[in-house]
Length: 151
Image (cartoon, rainbow, N blue to C red; front, side, top):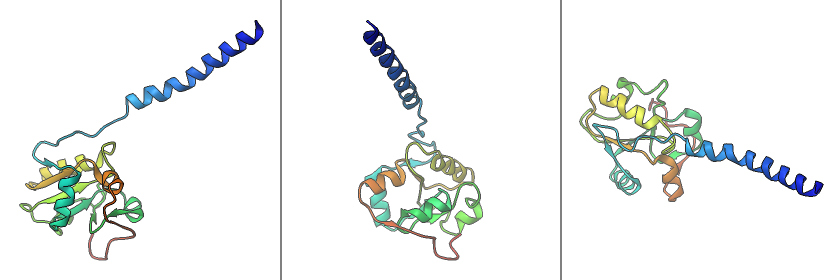
């Protein structure tokens, strides 16, 4: 009888440890699928834009950028370097460019797209899937700081 009680106690304790993980996963934040006024691009479209030489703007932190980024991307961290002036150094208001961050659980790219809209940029490509999908697909990555003068 004592052994059955202990088994039941361990089973209940084990289930209570699993429950919070399941609840957390179901409430995990996900970025919006679209940002009004921008064009959401998927991985295949982003690859084509990259091949066509369209400017890619990485809005993640400089530390994340140094660790790995889409080859040729310019790092304009949303918290301090993403300004209208800095963006204009790399793309005209009427030219296409791609904004990305880590992926669908990252809020930086959609927030950056909204900022660029507020500055009247008109050809914003919102790459919601971000570097996570890019890397998983085996596409070119670069490492380290961006070249000097590319604030």
